[in-house]
Structures are given as structure tokens and as C-alpha cells.
Image (spheres, rainbow, N blue to C red):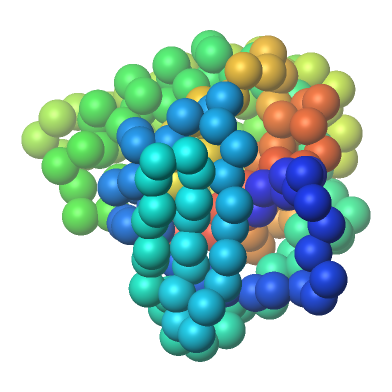
Amino acid sequence: RRVLPLEVPVDAPVEAIPPASRLEDILPLLDEADLWRITFGKGTLGLRSEGLEIAIRLLEGVYPETDNLLTLEAQTTFFVAVEPFREALERAALVVQKSAQPTVRLDAEGGALVLSANHPELGSYREILPVEGFEGEKLTIWFNVRYLLEALKGWEEERAVLQFNGSWKPFLVRPELDPGWVHLIVPVKIP
């Protein structure tokens, strides 16, 4: 979830689900310096800027409720340096890239976390990274490494906060200094 300020406030709240693939297609066309007017029509999202108009057909349905998952008190919390963490995840992703489910294991306790990954043909990976401000219970969790890498994409902050509520519940990843940006990642259940 990303919360951004609006230049002009809206009269009534609006909810819409644009297809992620369409948004990814148009992102290269958008210039950060431009001011965009966003409009909602019946089943469409309109984006307008000087000299450019884009219409996207919206998905039908209701987005799943996640607010209750984004506000829970965490059982385990710690900080990691974003760039070394991202690099370690990319190395782990190389090992599991040909897997149907590219899962990586994270073990956290005290001042360190251990990332590990295995593939029957490509071998195994294990790396220990320092963490800061560890609070709570020790933790072991499996997750799709692609989702966490995507969450860290584009961050300019030096540290990330990771918050967990056990090994089987979704966990949160957010930039340390930007409360408007949070990613919810669902763990993978490994027997």
C-alpha cells in the first residue's frame, strides 16, 4: 500500500482496482515532474497530463480487506540495511529461480538473520546478515523471494523495518522513514 498526498482533495472517497500489468505498461510514459489529473468513470480510470491522455479499464470486484493486517502489533520486529538485504535476496533468488515456487527461508534471532535457499540441481545458498533493533521472538519463515524483491524495488531509504506475527502469518516490510509505504507479504507454508 502506498499513500500519497493529493494536490486537490476529493469530495468523496473512490475505490478502484486497475490491472497491475496495465499500470506497468504506462509507467515508462509518466514523468515525475508532471502533474496528473486522475478521473474515474464507469469501469475506467483516466490519467491526463499536458499532451497525454490514458484510459485504463478497471477490474470488477472489491479489493481484499488488508487494513487489519497492516495495523497489528508485531511479535518480532527488526531493521535491516536495504541495499545489502536486497543484494542477499538477489543471490538467493539465483538459486531458486528455476523453481516453480521460488521460496527462501529467513531465520531471525538476536542481532542476525540467516537467508537460505535450496535447489536440487543448482545447489544451496546461506548468508548471515546483521539486523538492528531486534525485538520479540525468534522466527523462521518461508516466502516467495520475488515478492520481497519487488517490495524493495525503488526504495531510496537506507533501512527497512520488517514486522512479523509468527511463521504462518503475513509479514510487513516498510521503509524506516516513510509511513505511507508498506508491503504485506504472505509466507509460503513448507511442511
